[in-house]
Length: 406
Image (cartoon, rainbow, N blue to C red; front, side, top):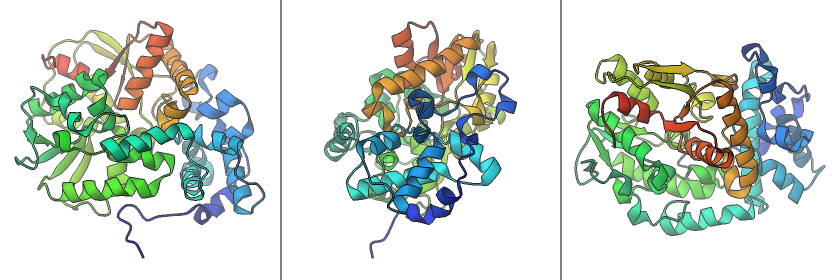
């Protein structure tokens, strides 16, 4: 029997109790309204809100899972559309767990794995991502040798040739999208200023494979996990820190079984927060800006990391932190989740525009977030609407306050 090197593999029927006892109460279709005073923002499910059929909400997809289980329905194009327009944001699970302790997000993840095993998933538009991973070690068509270009001029140690206490893992999007280079450079520089002994893999950094796992291709994901685990465990580092919320999710949930237990995985928001509270970073320069913080789904609902990034922002003199009506566990997805933008870009942008409208409603001058895919989606929405809002990664206003630019 083949050894599994990531989280124990489940199959859909193991969660049959969840989808058989779902009573279609529809609580999954809204936020926790007691924490959201504006009824305009009570909807929480992008696909249900956009396509307006019950099948697109969590309750409908749970019924689909039950139907597949008892062979009452067969895979179809409409079923595939329902499954792959889900952003796997876990907002439905946030609502459901409080009442019934069900796991709809996990059901949908396993439905995708079933679709891939049986050959009816993912979407044809996702195939170029897979092809690029096979050819370039990243899903976005950038040659692997260019992956470390973001770090030019930062005097970064290169592992494993040099030694460092921590590995800075940039991740797929930050490494390949030049528009994100200022954000990832700010992240790396802020950690340097905080005294962290950092190294990077540069051109040798490989994809974390998280996108393939989101699409349901666990076997392909595990090929990248296997290579990365072999690399990570041989570096001699004590910490892996990443600004990529999706990479943090993959490492914390999936790699953990085989990662050297002495290596701690941290999202950068956790590390920056700790550095500021310990006095290792001292924001001093005023940044006169009204910002609203957007919680990435994989960072917030997956790991309950809500306060660290907010404490970082509150530590910056002159910066005023506002909140979305749908904030923390009520947050709406940016539109970048679940591999949706690569198959349904118009729908992904529709979702991002809804979240951007909500940001404008708060009176903010800028949106700050801690995920590269959120940054990309908000910037697309700003471009599409002509909004005056600026979009920043968490590390960028912090670096401004530290008196540096990258």
